[in-house]
Amino acid sequence: MANKAAGAPSLGVLDSVVRNAIHDDQIPGAVLLVWHDGQMIYRKAVGDRSLEPHREAMTVDTIFDIASLTKVVATTTAVMQLVQKGDVRLNDPVAKYLPEFAQNGKEDITVRNLLTHFSGLRSDIDLTPPWEGRDTALRMALAETPAYSPGSRFLYACERKHSGCVLRQENLHPAADDAHSFSASSGLAAQDRPD
Image (tube, rainbow, N blue to C red):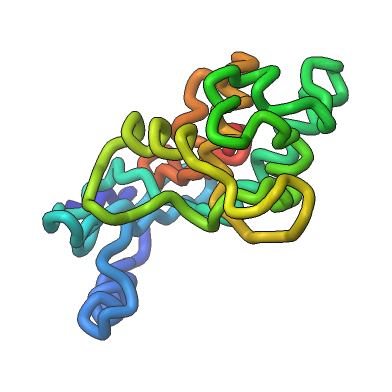
């Protein structure tokens, strides 16, 4: 159901735009959120928020992954704030801040390596066999073995979990596990959260 302020223009046209995108398999779903003059005048969930491993209906409080943007907007900013305060040093090993990271050849990977994609880690954790849950993802990420020596080559990697662990370890933000997300319920990007 859409929330709409009295006298607000009909925003139902947005529904048809999103439903057409869903019909054309461009997106599985969306949360429509419109603010005007400091008030939420329209909010509605449409479609699905998940298709695998099972279909789940979209809800107005769905958290969206903004992935690669988070590293630029949130993680780099948060890490540099820690650097500025003297709490983190870019050339320190990640294991200084996250001791469980120091396994399977990751002992020499630095915070700088993670931020610049020179960690040597693969581009993502293994998606087979199927698994789910943040704790499982973190366990798998921490158990990763680098594909290349740290600092030897650029390899775009989904390193936000490792970076988020460092920031969480530094107690920078209690909601660090939602660092790469956007909540349409609050209407605010998690830009101040680490990635």
